[in-house]
Length: 394
Image 1: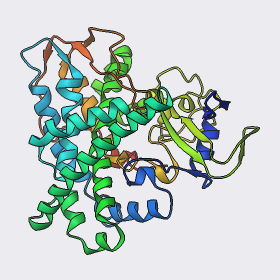
Image 2: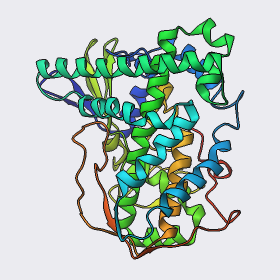
Image 3: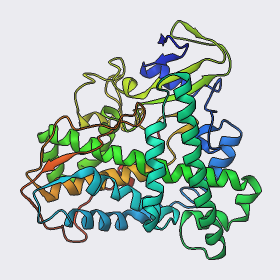
Image 4: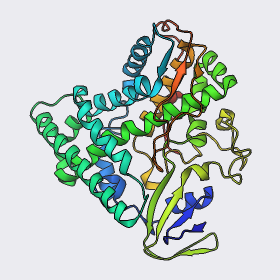
């Protein structure tokens, strides 16, 4: 626990972060869009329940698993395009187009509109996070608000069209369900749709980029993943611990909170350093070592977390809404890259990173390889997150 010069409190120990993520005396409220990320109970719970009706169990248990075959086909197609060359920027040619296509399919957003919302997404990535002077932060907040307003306007037009001519996508399901409008305003629906569109691909870009970077630095793990597709499940869990896509969250104390021998006063801003908590030596043995074996099915011993015992998806009531989809994309993508790229290697290490304190991942990832191997035949062994029990929060 560290009180910083600006009066904020930085929390870095795993147990303290988990405690605060479950403490009703801290608030997620903040400026900007009125989606679930920036709302507390009961508004958060009401909106999350409405969104979940058409996303996951119990009312729509098969939506994410039903996307598996399409994700495999998309990954296959993207890797096929890498043939005939010997190097690639994996972010631009694979790690970005994969999740952005998947989230567009899930929501019902036309993929041809991607160049429009990529501009807004880049603005948000460039401006999110408490960096700079108060005046600079105010400017950044104005730019964030402007980007979210443009996205909401775009999604409002799309939602109106889906209400008239629905498809089998998530936005269509929400806008044609009378129960949605009984508990959610139009502004709330659009804010949440914008959150899902952006968070649904930006963080997964980082998961895949961080994942391939880590695997190329860990050749023995890459070799095992190539030979054992099912190994993707613990690999992704360890990636979420070792190199999470989101490095910290910001909260506000609603009351005086005593934790770790320090009193955080009401009104103080709290920064939860998720990445540091994941490497807390009191939580995990040898925390700077990448070891997927930590996430096996056996019981935790206090220094070897079970699957899911990390902060890669946050925790508490704000546990990442898209975690099952992100896990599925990461498992399939990394397995296929491991199996199909012959002798992959880093061409720039370290790679250039985005200048963002919250969303941590390479801006570019240049890799070389000898050739692209043919895709496996349909029905061959693939990682199955559902059977492995990796798709649900713990």
